[in-house]
Each structure stands twice: as structure tokens, then as C-alpha cells.
Length: 218
Image 1 (cartoon, rainbow, N blue to C red):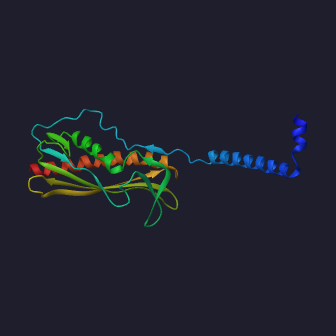
Image 2: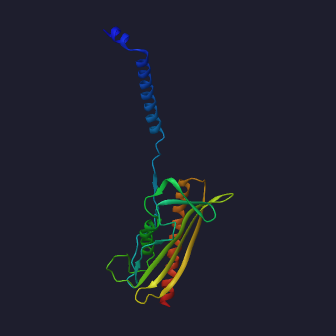
Image 3: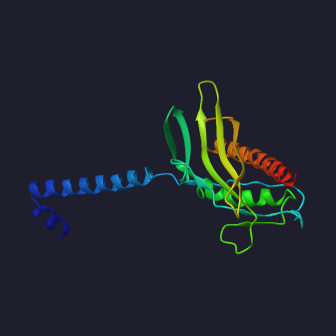
């Protein structure tokens, strides 16, 4: 029976069947290639700070501090990880991101750093109903990996202002700028340098707050 059926299929039909089989084969190969060329998964990273080994201590005679949300300069209000190869041009890694914007991640770290100095009666974030004597305003100016001719470095800068909450008078202000060397031109090396830079920045912030509170007591 099968032999009879095969004899009934003419040359034209055989060509059509061959073309159909080839089309199915090419379609299968195309699907396989598309699966192999799928984009790699995006990796996400944290800005963290271990803080001091001692527990935060409140000063019953100190002022109450309110830490405002951290704002970010244009180009840095994003979870994309920025790097610079040419002046005035910001680029971002394609498959590597922060878990949140650096400005948002810095906010709780500023609260912790301020609370560990033993300067304030209380340190609270925006939205708290607690009374505030002083307010810490800050703006992230940049967080970027800069690829130089001979080496690379991570650059981090934060503008901070300590403000009298009642009068809106600026008690003191400073731009805290930190540069950290980057071992290699990879996103993860930049993330490691960024976390080292954050630790240095928070240490300098503590020094700034201590100096301003001491000056206010004179």
C-alpha cells in the first residue's frame, strides 16, 4: 500500500515536500539560535555600610535632627550604574544596575551615620512626626566610575547642609568628595569601590556634624 502511494507522488510533489522539510528545519534552527542569543540576566548591587561596632547612643542634651530625602543631580537619579570615558558624556552599563537609585540607598545610611555620633537626642527621617531642631539636607552630585588613561577611579560627591528647622537658616554646608581607585574596568570592581567610598563619605559626614554641633554650643 505504501509503495502504491509513493508511486502516486510525482516529481513536483516531491519538490514541494522537500521545500517544506527544509523550511521546517530552518525554522527550528532559527528558534534555537534565538534562544542561544537571549540577553544575559541583569545583575543588581547594593550600597551598604557596616557602621561602627558600637551601638548608637543618644545625647539627652543634644538637638533633634531630621534627615531629609537625598536628591540627585540630573543623570544620577537612576538605578543605572554610570561610567565616564569621555568628558561630559555619561554612559551606563547594560546588564548591571543598583537595586535602587543611589540617592535612595544613601538616605538610611545618612540616618545611621548621624545617629552613631552621640551628638543628637534623636535622628529621624522625613515623614516622622518628631520635633526637629536641625535638618540635614543633601544632594548627590555624582556617583560614577571614571576611566582615566592610566587608571580608573570611583568618584562620589555629596553636598550637605545643616539647617535650623525653625528659621530655615543654614548653620553650615559642605561638599564631601571622595575618590577611590578601581582595580579593573568592570561593574563589580566599581561597586566595590563605591562601597568603600560611601564608608569614607559617611565618616567625613560625622566629622562635619560634630564640628557644626560643637560650634553651635559655643
